[in-house]
Image (cartoon, rainbow, N blue to C red):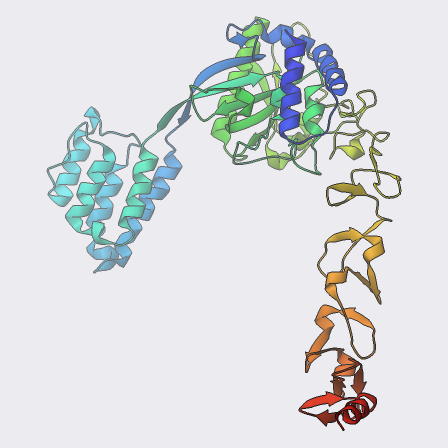
Length: 491
């Protein structure tokens, strides 16, 4: 295991996500990972599909969608219900319903050899002789629908497609990864996937440090499937079809939320069975487990400590499970998910739980200096102006356009602060106002108060006069003084 190579890979993941870090801090966390994951690494290395370079067990599985009898029944009923909209309604089209019901007494894709009686029954009802053994059930449905004219219904194609899809199981081969790779913890909810979770290193807020929290504990590993069985490139960078966090400690297996399909019990069971089989193979103990699904029974075997991750397994709506391996010589009392990783700035102090939304410890919070006054500022309160960092005392956010500006350019208009671009000065009272609170009257900028009176601007001196009649000369307006000067000069 080349820690230097792993460090370089982790640094690249952090750099690509625009996360501030020091290489020394990354190494500190990797030392913690190496020490705490020693037991799991030794266990998983016993599996024949362990890949030392990728630090993962890699399998290709058949990700099946099994035939669901309930779904077929619902789709069949939806198709039959179309006859209520057809001429004559249900009574006139009852034979169609009887044929479809007869055809679906057995929920398999093709009509079997033992269903010759079914074929005879349908023929007796409808007179159709085109239905034969070995035929796709969906094709037989279409033949019956055309015979009775139900295929003319505007919703027929949609309902038929749903039933045909339900009758056909899907078998997709997927690359499946059971990983202890540090990069997989950081990328457990990577941006390449179309979904994310609370433990995402790219998000601001929430539980960013949860990725490191899981990485540095002694029990957590990442289970995920890819959208292909022949992936290219680093596995942790590829889009994930699904992902789960598992925690294992001496016979106790905790299964957390299945993303993105929280309610897919079929996949949850499949993935749990895969992991249970792997652990059974690696421990050499029979693959017999005691499954617990109730909240109280699960929490009994989970010990909570100070950590930075989102404990979704504590919430029953996320459908966690806990399994206990039977016949193991020693079974732990509990699993302890998560922990406190090291700050990615100093690499010496732990990230506290109340800073789980960042990768910085309390002491390294003040990692920036104001470009104007030099004051130390933290990431949460800094303001950026022209790519430089400033404290809140040296800057303000304009109440008009919401841009961040330097304090010395701010204009106070009781009770707000505006930038110069959001302020206009009334040409009569010389007071500043928010630009939306002034108006242009005869090319004169006036506040609402001054605009309610008659104004004019002297053509020569430019002064604005209120409630004073202008003196006209050659079609232009002048104050009395400028008018007299003009009049004398023209005499």
